[in-house]
Structure formats: structure tokens, C-alpha cells
Amino acid sequence: MQINWTNIKTEILAETKDILQTEPNLNTNEVLDLFVKVLLYPINEPDLAGVATRIPNALQKILLENLPIIDKNAYFPDVAKIEPYFRKILCITDNTSYQRVANSKDGLGSIIPKLNLNPNNIKLSAAWSDENPKTHFAEHLIKALAVVYVPTDDCMLLVRHKQRRG
Image (cartoon, rainbow, N blue to C red; front, side, top):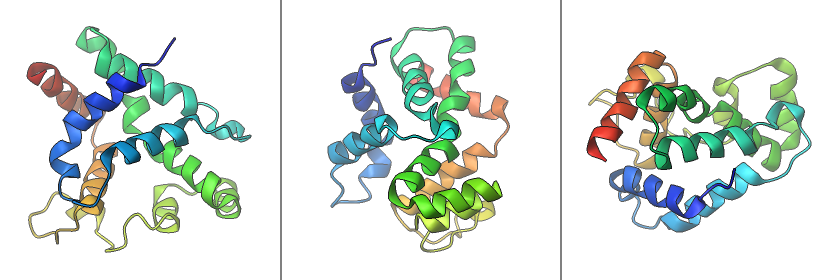
């Protein structure tokens, strides 16, 4: 299947424009290009082989194809589970740390600090709280991580919302 990255990037920008605007110095096109480069970056790690195929395929199906909601729901977990993507980033940027995480079967709790993705140490349980300090993009990242722990049926509400808007 040919992945239409131009249209996928357009859809991602439309979905995240409010979040990304909180960072005035963020070049969104550059970020999206880097996201795609990481997805497609060839690595020799069998545990991460599917990142380059499953996520792009799921993005194509969810964002661009006119599929019934039940079919889009089937692809949603491939996009919502961001741990494999973060593992790939760690593998590319710090293979020694990646090997330690992989050998110990550690999860996001070990990967996020190694990638310095939560410098303000926002607690996952407080991610949706109004008491949570504003941290711009990091805050939104933690909110996205919180979605990983929401039951799949609840996550499907997000996809249905997108279809109604869209």
C-alpha cells in the first residue's frame, strides 16, 4: 500500500493545531517530517520491525480512508500505543539504553525519563487535572500517554468524534 504522507501530515496538523500553537518556536512541518523519518528509519531490531509498517498503515486507514467506524476502530490501537515508537527513538538515539530497557522488559516508565520527555515530572494520574502546571507540549504529551491507559472502547469515542467533525 502506498502511504499518502502529504495528506496524513495535513490531517495531523488539523488535529493538533491548537496544541502545537502553544509552542511558538515549533516548526510543525519539521516536526512532522521528523516523525515520519523516525517511523521509516531502518533498524535491525526484530522487536521494532512493525513500527515502520503498522503505524503508517493505521494512520492511512484512520485519517484518510473512508472506512466504517468499526474498521477504523481495528486500526486505532496501532496508533494509540506509542511505546513502540518511543522504543524506536531510544534505539536510534541511545542504543545502549534501549538494550537495557529491552532486556529488562521495562515499559514507558523507563523510556520516558531516558528520552527526557517529562522534564517537569507530571504525574500520569494528574494529567487531566486543572491543578496540573502548564508545561506546553510536555503537558499534551502526558495527556496523550494517559489515553494509552484508557479502555479501548473509550478511545473509540475519540475516533467517532473525529468522524463527526470531519
